[in-house]
Length: 259
Length: 53
Image (cartoon, rainbow over all chains, first blue to last red; front, side, top):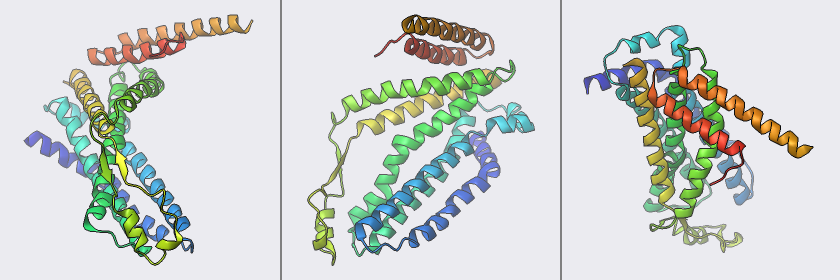
């Protein structure tokens, strides 16, 4: 446990600028959202949701760069500090991953908060359950289904490439993994889609139509297409399982190469 | 002509993948990395020969 906390502290020292900049960028996005002054409520919400989508995508990209900075550390010699440390490879991987995940949770819950803010600006007063779904459930579903596997994949890619740094053929494993992964993911996601809704789906935003109708502009909007969102559980569990498998493989490679 | 060209291209890509597979097998001391390499090279080769799942 001491090794883990030490490595987590090391990770914090190494990446706090990235994390702070990323979370701080939410202020920029809030400013950007506030600049959208379109009169039509639907159009306004659409533009703002698009901006939040861009913020989420860029945040994911920054987190991937943050977690995958193993090659640069190798080149600058910082990696040698880790090479001489006795903890298992799994502990190194876990520390790096936990820090990135903590930053991701803060960032995406912040985006959920911004989503609540833009909805509130339209005059729609959400109940506590809907707010919790918007600020917590949606970000965590997105983190679990997309970001966690993406971060695991990035970490595995960089550790896999690092396993070949002695032979100097790092571009071959990188190329093979980048080309092969979409095929594997396609087959895996086809299977996940096939088994979706085998378990009961999670119903979100059930009372939104009633809430829209209660607003001053509710009568002007066609709410016939607004229904509860039923999200399947299986893709989330499947992607979390995939992420865990990738992390275990990454830890194992680290152990074999550095151990 | 086109069919023959495609067959030749596929054989060349398979040869390249075979070479990469050899480099990946001999370029590391990690057996897990070798296994992962075999998986990805196998998936790419399977795609090149037109296999599907």
